[in-house]
Image (cartoon, rainbow, N blue to C red; front, side):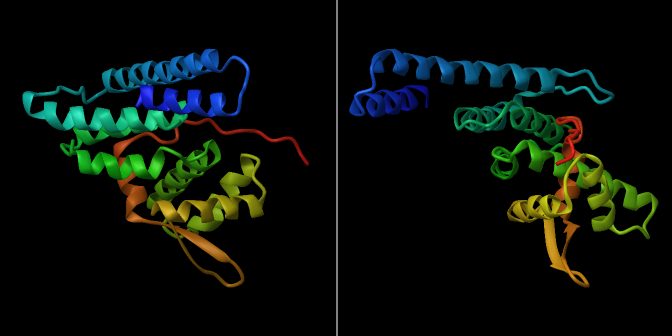
Length: 211
C-alpha cells in the first residue's frame, strides 16, 4: 500500500511539473509510513489496556487476527483519523471479549466507522448514551433527548438533523416520520456497537461560541 501511494504522489507531482517532485514523493512515503506506525501504536495500546476482562489471545486467534490487522492497516493507509482508528481498535478488543473475533465482523465495522467525521462520531456516542437512558426512563423520547444533548454540545437543531441524516447510511440510526419533521431512532447495530466499544470515550464534547 505504501509504495503504491507514493508512486501516485510522485507521478502526479511530476506530471504537473511541480518543483521538487522527487522530494515530495519521499514526503508522501514518510507520511504513509508514519500513519502505519501510529496505527500500530494505537492498536497495541487499546488491545493491551488493563480492564476487568483482560484479553488473552490463543493460537486459534492468529489467522483471524492477522486478517483483521491487515484491514485495520488499510483503514490507516486510506486516511482514517486517529479517533476512528482508536475506535476500530476498541472494536477489535470488544470482538475478542465477546468471543466474536471474526474478520467478517470487523470488516463490517471498519466499513461503517473508518471514515466518519469527528462530528458524526460524537453524535454516535451521544446516541448510545441516550439509548442507555431509555433503559432507565423508557418513557422519554430518544430523538427529543438526543437533540437536547447535541444542543448542549453546541449543535444547532438543523445541524443535528443533518448529522443524523448522514449517519443513516451506516445502519446505526433509522429515519422515520414525526408530526412535522423527520425523526431518528436507534437500530440494533447501535446496540451492538455499544456492546463492543466505548464510543463516547473516543471523542470529547465540543463547545461552540454563539453565532
